[in-house]
Length: 439
Length: 174
Image 1 (cartoon, rainbow over the protein chains, first blue to last red):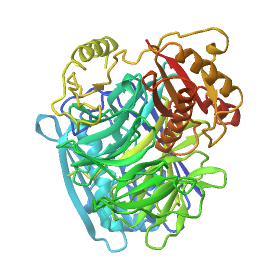
Image 2: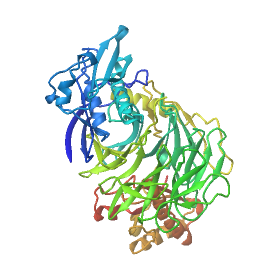
Image 3: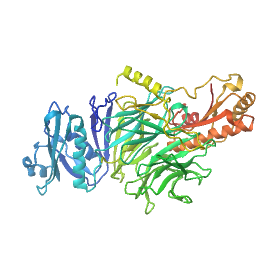
Image 4: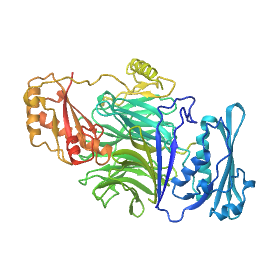
């Protein structure tokens, strides 16, 4: 088991690349702990990039790439102290140096200033064994987008070597709770996948829960208890414009966007309080009822073809996960067995895996079930792990775990072997949802 | 964002907020409306409504009526023990005063999945609601909301804290 402590400090006024001008909130310290049991990670050296002060704000692009690749579990990155040379171009790389220190690949690069305050990030990926340059690319953008460019370098390197698209240059949303009852404040925060660049998109004195991304990354749906009752809202991330789409009597909960973005699956309870699954057409406001029984039916999530829903139901006595088609008359089929408690389903992007909260002994942990053969692997090790969400490339799961009594965000690779913990000093972080690939 | 600017934005949103009516009405049998609230400030941070809708009143304080919390066993929505007496007292009070309304707020402990816990909290609130109806309260006097595990009464991850969080609170309304 290898433990690597990596510290990431949030710079003040770090502006996300996707927005015009947004001020980021108070500073937060994040600690990224990586633990990995992978037996044969790919050894790679990420050489410090040539810098471009002061425009680059001192951002260490190579360190961002190193953290990304190490956290994926697929790579073992060379410590800087062991680097005997620091080339910034492929032609400067002396292969023997890197072979001697046991690296299969080396990444070199430069940050250079362009006109009008923009920056260019150039990288080259060299195969140390053959000497071949496998990839090179230039990313350009304003200074505010430099961190995003570093994540795009990580994505490019990851894809070249591992063969699937990287998901480092994507975003997450989560709920942050600060203060103590009865004066807690709740925020919905959009951030980078490593927790950097946190930006609040909603603030409230009342609980917020169940955020869900649309597949184009433009909208969030969530539950708000403003007005001392539950309602479902849809909000545009770009400018905060929000619209209340369900405030019916009783429970309004668990909204998830359909893959085409036109519908929400949600939970309604009515005055009788019996939670059932419905589908709401956002344009027509038309409502279709999907389940109708005395059990608690909730936490519906769409299959990737948009034709069925996976959901939690306790119709068999305790919570289990079922699948039901959205056509009238379709009957639910039970998916999970084994544990007495399986809830909160999420489907992998390729539709083959189901992540969930599962009771493992006395602990609530993240499990992943293979939908073809039914086998279940428990990925996490905490006591109260919850809210799993797949990365858009299906390689990792982000979830909420507890660490010494405080709620923290954590990621784990789908083989369960590599984990990272993102711990914020600010408060309790919960319900992380991994956003889609950028278009 | 600077604190004074945040306060200004909250005031602006509260002023703009629920005054603006929604463009679309929902199907007639349900009460929802959709309300367009803009982000209100150029930072794109939405402010949730700070309206005092649903605000609380002190309610009766004599004897058993001062007790507003009914506790539950794990995975149960059965009213037992002192909860039975508390429900009886409030039912009698409500039955005699048809204009008085209460909101029944259901809660769970922190274990397990959040939205499933919303369902469980609602089950508990509904159990209290049915018991009140049986003992003389009327439908129009009672509303329910479930907070699931989102508003614990006690912090902590042990049975002592969990037992204090598995509850329904009777909240008298203005």
